[in-house]
Length: 237
Image (cartoon, rainbow, N blue to C red; front, top):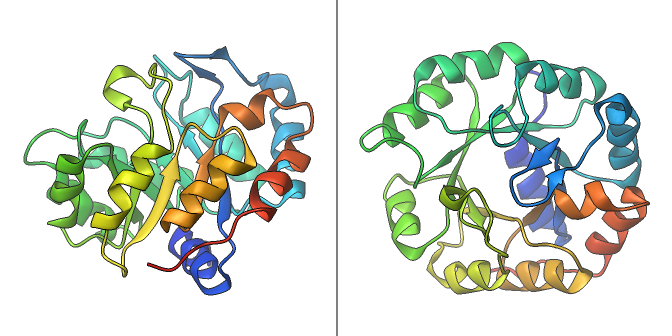
């Protein structure tokens, strides 16, 4: 075991009542275009760590998000923080690959994982030692995820099927949180730009938030991490 745990980050946030800020390291997004200059990737990662991010994620889809395993390996080599892989998972071999590169956790989105494969892939990931978040965007997705007795879910405030082209709103998290059992950790993703956005997700009961575009576009990502985190308090469910 390497000692890195995303579940541990979420548990710590719940215990201290200080929501964790996770950074989504994505080179480009369909909505916002190019975000991170690869020549400055190491500097950007160091800045995020200096700002106090608790963990990192990266999308490895090469078509829409310009991700890939080489990029993921660079991120893994640069930081010892827990690393979450986001992708359109459909085969166990992708999970084997995740372990080989050094990911600690994966996100299986209910609405993009092939029908009948969600539980199988979740089980295979756990057998490999990967932590698993089940991604949801609607109440129906949440019902499907909760039927699998998850440790943690990720509420995406944008629609991944639409490649997150929609504006997104923290209201998605606020709407779904009353349906989430108290023992299930929640990571709220996307549509975070202000301290108030983070405060709303934390007040609804999310232990952590995942922020990508706002950090990538910021002139001072470290300061933004501190600003978004320090004004919010997790409210136990």
